[in-house]
Amino acid sequence: MKKNEHFVLGADFGSDSVRVVVLDAFDGSVAGSNVSFYPRWKKGLYCNPKENRFRQHPLDYIESFTEAVQNAVAEAAEKTNIGNIADLICAVCMDTTGSTPAFTDKNGMPLALTKEFAEDPDAMFVLWKDHTAVAEADEINRLSKTWGAEDYTMYSGGTYSSEWFWSKLLHIARKNPKVKKAAVCAVEHCDWMTALLCGTTAPDKIKRSRCAAGHKCMWHKQWGGYPSVAFLTKLDSKLAEIQPLLGTETFTTEQKQGTLTTEWAEKLGLKAGIPVCVGAYDAHIGAVGGGVADGVMVKSMGTSTCDIITAPVPASGEKEKCIDGICGQVDGSVIAGKIGYEAGQSSYGDYYNWFRGLLLWPFKNAAGAVVLGREPNEAEIDAYGKHILADLEKACENIPVTEMLPVALDWINGRRTPHANQNLSARMSGITLGTDAPAFMRMLLEATAFGSRAIIECFEQNGIEIKKIIAIGGVARKSRAGMQILADVTKREIAVTESDLSPSIGAAVFAAVAAGLYASVEEAQKRLAPGIDRVYKPDAKKSAVYEKLYKRYRTLGASEEAEAVRYAD
Image 1 (tube, rainbow, N blue to C red):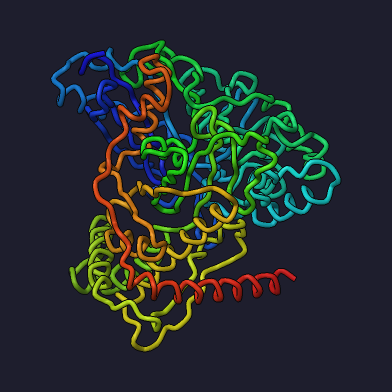
Image 2: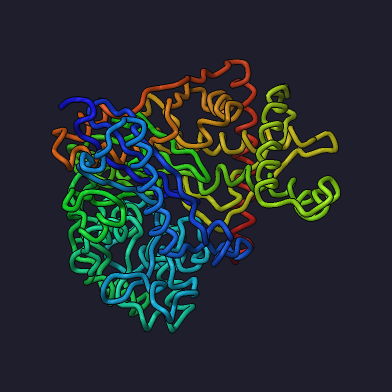
């Protein structure tokens, strides 16, 4: 293989946008890239944050992906001076957020693409952070542990979450009789988008992602696939109807969903017939792009966090080493032949954005008009908000680390790990009249770092050694104060990758394997994944103080959990 001879395309569907890269499969250099924001989502359509409802229209995915691919390929052609570069792109792979399911018709198409349900949020994809299904998740957990047969939460950390597939479908089936009646099957975003490009969206033709099915759909080979029809019938007949249509097999990401259809090749400006990989989740593919390996945890840090690490399949069998409190362990969810372990925080960057929204309220609603002499536009509001957070981070670096600092919980969007519980909320302690905006910002940065430490402890207490931590994502790249605090709180070095494209580069790694350019994911990863840009080292003196503040964080958390139980009763 030579440079400029073979290219691969990786796509990363995030919460707000899709990013596409065209990668030279020889050395991993980025020939072109583009980001396209979801137009309906950007307007806030179909969402209600006060109800924790977050839905995305499938047309957002189709339109933004098409635009991003066309622009990335055009940029690649210009940068490389290869006019026919589209003909040299030999495979496509993509990742999405998850769990992000939607009800479908008999052809496997989301109901929102029909005229009847075009404006119905319940017929759209339910974004990962939609927490409308908390009650349904609680019901699934109770049933799984009491119905007398398999505990289907065994490989999901012992708890099924409202952020996941069956909880969300159950909630919509009960809430919306019209959608329930029309629905024939259901699909994850990562499965639907790849199948769409291959013309294989019919339920019996889709190759379902091992990553999605194992981590979010309670799929496991031990019980022959998904939870049984008998189990799902106890929840809702619609779930029982769907189960047989999902099949029993799942597929790892280096395998092919199919090949790019002529229709989609013409839309995207690519060559028909090239392989399209089986889909997977952004954090898992991003971990590959970030350098995940046995003992190496990759923290994908954006609106939320997802922490991924791999390990060999235990010689005694996977059942003998179930990790309690995490978001699942799945053979092949990250790299085939390895157990992929997942944990995370339901809010990370979202916590800072919440604070940003509080500070922006006067500018958006009153002060902005006074300053500008007119109502501020969206771009001005966004620029002002970014300026605020950057200034606050810079100012909070000068605050001495003492035992008197205020402490907060990071559960403003519930807790994902350890032990998922979306009934929990944030709590703050030690705030005084001397707590100004920079101090409040530092408190939030410390809260998310305390949550990360709790996850690390959860893994290591269960025998998963973490030798190295690599951080990827927007927060990791932008928040120097946050990364230093994370190092100080965890007492560990935090390495940050030199690229902010780890998920889409990870997708390109899998595409290169599917195209036959590399024999294994590990081989392609070593050649194509970006290196380390910088390393944050813990400050021993600050770490000693954070040890005491972390104990306050745990005490505050215990208080919140006790109160949540009282409210539930």
